[in-house]
Image (cartoon, rainbow, N blue to C red; front, side, top):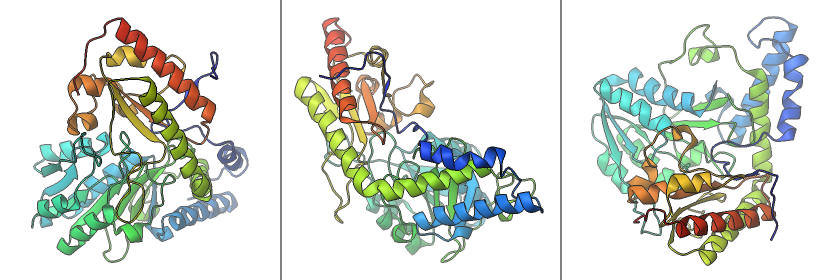
Length: 407
């Protein structure tokens, strides 16, 4: 079986991705040759502004939006804050009730918690539990039933960053539209990994980022619907009036160019890349379940599909809990295999994954889970290496008598 004793095998592509060399090549001229401020009125500024406009149009086309509906940000966390706080602070007269899901990313849950401190009422809906084939799935009917006359916003993630579940946002958005409530989604893990069409989904606001799809860190976008209905937000960053006053600050031209390039490459390669990643993911799962006992899949069944035939899980996502193993010891035992336990942004939080706890896993089982994010630069050799590394580590830790975990 192939081994890579001196090479790091990276399987943490939900946390971030390696920048594709083609993206780097596209960005380079905007550091040293076409370095103008796109808001300046001279030839250098004109050239930079033209490139930003081209990138904005390219990204908009990728999600079936209008170019004027794209606002550039520093990343999905800022986009989420702008969408959530900007929407509810703009239209508080409607009410102070917000509906979301207990498995959302902290970039959504933390802004909601701050709004709760200011008097907003937050309803966090539960999801299908770990023993269901649809674990992590949110029933759209639950959203419809949670909406009240004073509900001002519903925010539901499109694809979960830990267990890969892809939600049925079209049905959820329809329930929102029937009640005249704005619908936001964090699509950070979805854009570039699965087809995303904002009009088909029917959403009003959508956050996404470049560094999850082989683009640069520090640049993201927020889609803001301009018709049926026109969505207006209170800006969260002011100063200069850039981007029609929706987000102040000098635009990151190299990052925006790289963002557009990464989106274009992801869409062009998706027809072949998605099945390839699903195959590698399934091989990894099969190898682990064949060689180890007392392990549990976290999230929906790998082959499950929605009623419209689309996959219920991201193709490169696998999350597995290993019984009778101490979670911290397991993660430390990975050596040169880069995987994670939960979301990267909560790695300093000693608490177990809130997503797995929401799925009904015990604290020990949640701590003893590993999240695999397979990506563009992973190969079959990497999968074999991971199976060997994890099998060896789990077997050794169990022989040492690590504390038992109960699913």
